[in-house]
Image 1 (cartoon, rainbow, N blue to C red):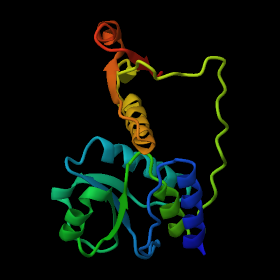
Image 2 (tube, rainbow, N blue to C red; image 1 turned 30 degrees about the vertical axis):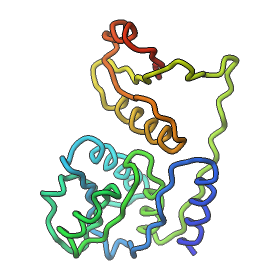
Image 3 (cartoon, rainbow, N blue to C red; image 1 turned 90 degrees about the vertical axis):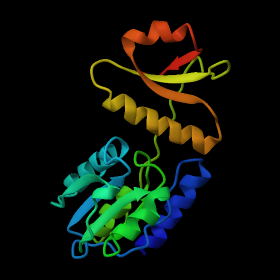
Length: 201
């Protein structure tokens, strides 16, 4: 039942143009999973942010499972381990850790699988996510003439990087080819002399 509901939810999201991952097919429960590891090439960056997102969901669900991130080269083949990795890295992860449960995602920051993983750990169907109301504006944003989208940051780059990766995934899903980057805010004036920039704050 849970898998059927998740599949329906994924189909609806895909119809709306949202980034959707395939439904988790492997059996996941608190009996089969004692730790969750996000794996990527370097074990940093996007996998760390993905681990942070799922760790927060696991904590809010009242579960005490550790959620960490590692480089694929540092993975150990152990039982009761759930490994989350991007689709292109799945063959390598499965080769290194054949005893683990593997979940592939398209993007660590926009995956639809995290709620499904938590629901399976809780032995319940994934909860439907309420639709986010669209934001109206008197002046709609136009990307005409824009060659680069920048997420500025002050002292720490974390939130800007998450925003950048999420927006890149949305553009990719829409078939829009546009450069997206982060930039310390004091350099914005200099960068704007080179590119036509849309700043997302």
